Amino acid sequence: MTFIALAEAHVLDALREAGVRPQRIRPALDRLQELFGREYVLAAKELATDGIDVLWDFSRTEAVVS
Image 1 (cartoon, rainbow, N blue to C red):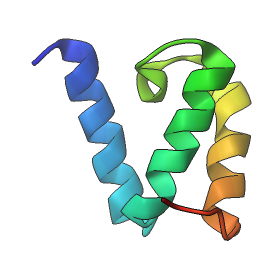
Image 2 (image 1 turned 30 degrees about the vertical axis):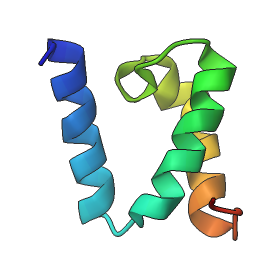
Image 3 (image 1 turned 90 degrees about the horizontal axis):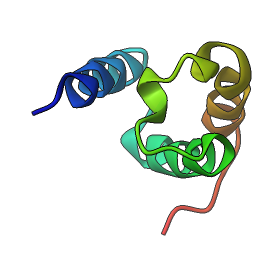
C-alpha cells in the first residue's frame, strides 16, 4: 500500500466516523476526481479549499447512487 493510499484510507475512516454514509462518499469522490484531474483526491491539498464544498453538497443531497 502506498503512503497516499494510506492517507486516503485515514480520511475515509474519518468521514465514516463523522456519520457520512459510504454510498454518499463514492459519488462525491468521483466528482472530485473529475474536478481535480487526479486519482487520490482525499489527500490533495485542493480538498481543503475547493473540494470541501463538493463533499458537503453530497452529504446534504439525495444524489442518485447506482
